[in-house]
Length: 291
Image 1 (cartoon, one colour):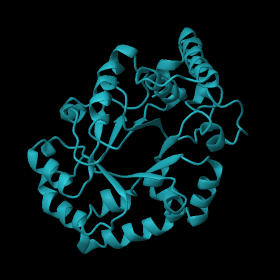
Image 2: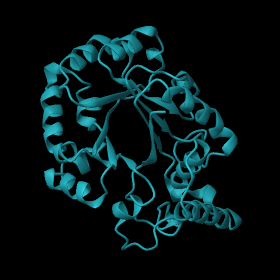
Image 3: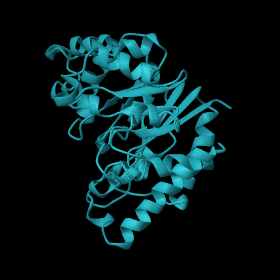
């Protein structure tokens, strides 16, 4: 069976658990070297902060050299594409979106050079509709080769066969998602458009995303889909984006078990620590205030 990588969307959550961070539920202290610590429990992570220009603009090649050095061989980072490219310029070649993207690839090149680069994720804006199909296709037609690309749609108008055929043509993975938005339910189908796949689980809270703990019953259909998808792709990456209070840590480790991986003693303890922390917060009525 082909490779399955399971991890979290982000790792740098230095606040205490009561503030929604991971210090307490997962990280021992605020001075813990978080990425290095995280890499003892998972072999992949999605980098979410790179999407936001206020963080991306301050990143240099040195940022990614440091990331590569902090994790062991075999670890993979999947990176979101900056919002300037996907949300501001909306993949428009005439607005310089490709030039910005090539600069981005150069900046993250230390990860590719050390074989620690996973998928490159284009998360489109909720306002980016199928009316932008030709604009999207033109951008994809100019993508540099040698990378594993994935695209996440966030508007229901993409629920047609055309987008899937377009992604198959360019060997780009259609991102499967679990989210609170019923209009995006079609993205929870097992969609394979490339020789690699990507799943992102955002939580199921009504009205807001992310602050959610999945039950085993809710995850079981995804575990079943994973077995199906793994037979069709060389690698399937799955990221939990329900990050507040370390909930993604607990669910990602739980999902590893559900898909056939035996947890180490350290991983099992980390899962139980997060769950116990959440129980303690629930007992004093604090968890529901964190949105």
